[in-house]
Length: 371
Ligand code: IPM
Ligand code: MG
Image (cartoon, rainbow, N blue to C red; front, side, top):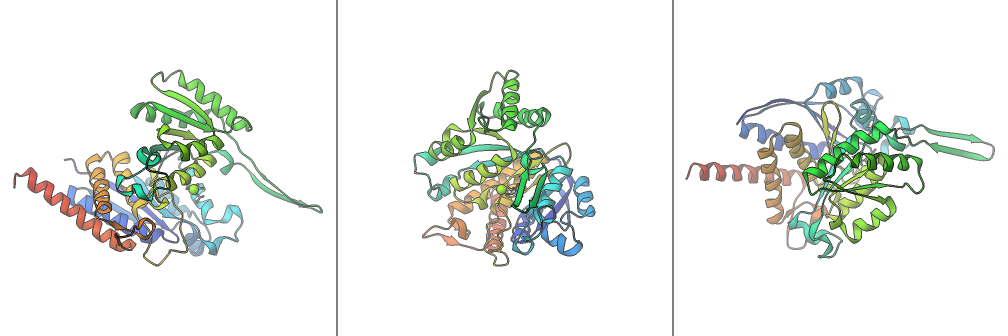
């Protein structure tokens, strides 16, 4: 076992962000102490709380720390307190600026139905049997980063959002998707709106051209409206999905609903530098401060960090399997509660997970010593 020294920047953010972050950090600390790693944590203001403290959602010091980190763990940003601010000044603009500054162009959102949560899926038993989809969302381009403009004259207002993609931007994320499909079942579905949008036509041309370099991948194209329907009607046909920034935002929430709760889904965003890990849900202001939020998306984001950024597969699997065992024991947060099960708050879920993780390790150590 080689021990690792890693610098992890924490951006708890707003709403339920700090609560779920506390639970995930405890998991990472357990991992460090049990497996002999040294993780150094440094927390920085980001989002609405940074606006309150310094007037800016992404302070220069926060960005500098992120650049120098080995990996970044983010909670969530935003809340009604900052809703009246113009687009470029909101907490969310800090998140977009961070993605842009670190050039985080790949966003991986695994949509996995956990067998113990099957009955929470809105899909019937037949359809929900096999939902294991990797959504790869382009994260640094599209309508998110084009110019947003509002003009007004005597007749009223006129708003414009510009969507832009270049060949290079499509190529680099598509290469990642082909590689991911090759490492899985070789099925890749690229989702666009090429019957209407010029950006989508460029997207489809580029992805189609790259397919020639990946004969082992069976590539299919779907329009996004049809894809949304197919995801609900026959999700098992999907393995790896590649799509643009806006469509990926929408389809990943849909995917989360298929597997029981948006609270469960982690994500990884990567580019040339440090990767960022975050749950795909938002700051859920109505749940904040009540200790009822589901920390699983953030816990699984921490597990993804261990696996993808640090190559610590054993540690990552230890966390995931411990979460699954808690689910099997009927330990649930409110969003995934079911009759006859034990509904716990965010911090209690963390407490029980801590006990479960250490217990599993004890058992493992004992049985490997033949005790
Ligand atoms: C997400 C979120 C963000 C996005 C918001 C908070 C800007 O919905 O990560 O899916 O639209 O990308
Ligand atoms: Mg979203």
